[in-house]
Image (cartoon, rainbow, N blue to C red; front, top):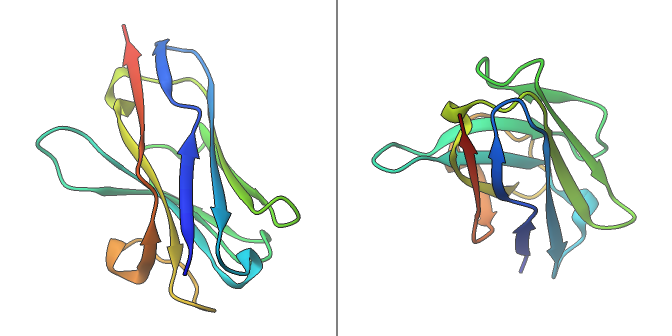
Length: 125
């Protein structure tokens, strides 16, 4: 029903900034809370951020709070993750996800029904 495509990843140095985008299609974008997750090699997929349907409320993992900002543009069917002051420990594949229809997105991957293919973010020191 919903297809998600991430973009914007790349190789940057510590302290740099990067903005990820996630374009949605195949559904009514404003019906879905959206989330960002990341997964490093050998580790479990971890919560990064979530944003409500209207974009009025957000939640962040403690490790990124104050550095990352999630936002959305429902007219463009796109959710963003602005990442500032990047650290080597931010290196991971980043995934966007759409929550169950009309539900508030939480911190568990199990609360999300649709996933993008991921985009690699590598932060060197």
